[in-house]
Length: 234
Figure (cartoon, helix red, strand yellow):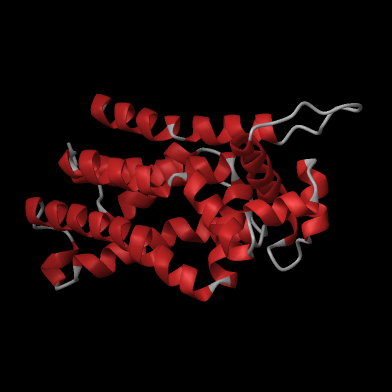
């Protein structure tokens, strides 16, 4: 369990840079003369503002004028950094750090006991969902409004996470003959069902907002994992 807690803490720490960037860049400019920012800082300021505006209105409902106003820059500067909507979506996806998180999971979770690893994945997703629902809305809007980016997102990130979850279920089923594969269930299907359970909270809680977000991500994660990998009776 100590390894599980350590992995959970490492995964949660990946949020710090994103939240810090948003807090600094998302502040409203003070009246009077504005300090001159470096190009990288202006870019981060625009991305942080986009996270706020797009989470509220979606990409189609976000005007360049509103984005520039929220970022405290000119429309010309927005176009200079992000000539197209796709450029802005890619910047947001890059700043979220999906690649770093997937690499960390692939290198660390695969060596953990399957049940603990799957619980770490579930808790990580549900905790981020509770703390940053706006981020999940922006990613959802971005990939849904740009079909070829949706395919790219699946190939680069989601397919790898599903593959990791499949390997974890394969290991769990190999270790415990009393579980689902005894009835001929494919671990890849189980992994997609497991991940779909997590995505329900994304859709219902963050996207459509018809249900509350999980109040206790750890307890919810454990309950979901128990459906697929019940604890061994002591």
